Image (cartoon, rainbow, N blue to C red):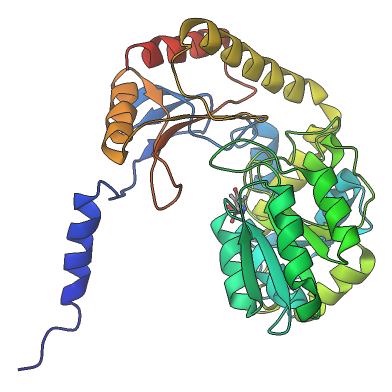
Length: 387
Ligand SMILES: *Cc1c(COP(=O)(O)O)cnc(C)c1O
């Protein structure tokens, strides 16, 4: 009797349910913003990566609309075939100018930028050192590259140094990969120390600025600018889909590395170019990031405000260390985190539970936006205090 080869899927789903790891989508209606309609009900939105409130900005919407009318909905092909338009290059120049790098290359998502860059620059004979808490796209890029992967404990520079001194000499090239703002924790990588170690052991360094672009640094260039490391040799990855309110990803770096990636990054060469609407929206967002620093100032004021009120009114909450608009507090189990998330939702607060396997410990994750108002923050604290 042949057994049903798909039967395991249902069993697997049952196991996922039992562990309180089951996930499903929730529908948002209308424009994104500091408040949104979640399943028909208005909630204050602490779940969004739209840090500067640009995803619903009329200027981005107008730019995307005009680009669609003038250039069409689809780009019709990969960049090397029929998909390359003048605005793609214009966007790449704008990213390079924001980042103060020689050049940049736009991918269809941040995830694909990581897969493409990592697989292009290291292979079987090489070594990757990866922070334990890195984003899935860095981890899977590392696996796909075929290089030997060694994880180091989160942000532990000494452990990284020891691993490199033991193993570096056995490999051809070496690449250190790290988030800049850790997406599920909110803390920052120790960039100056990482650059120093990269120099010492002759390693390349790739940093993922997904949550830092538009958010950190005086001009919004990211963590690299925040730490005063602008102009140093490294490979920067980012996304157009968080503070920049659009869709897509990028690599920023030297002319040489970008030229190389155009020739060797499979997730750039063999996929359709971004649509004109995505490109135009991102281009407008970068201009706003550069011309309206007050948005970033407001964002950081909101972060400081929330931290202050939380410390005063909720001293028992277990906040994870954070230097970004991402604030997480830990709960003892996935079930508790789910309950807390539900409780917040019924109090009109959208702040989701993040559970294993995404993170090692369950937590509620709060993302602050520049467009949150004081009353939003007060309502959040009030809801948190009743958990
Ligand atoms: C969101 C995120 C990505 C993926 O970016 P997309 O453009 O959404 O694919 C990559 N790395 C990190 C650290 C992220 O937080």
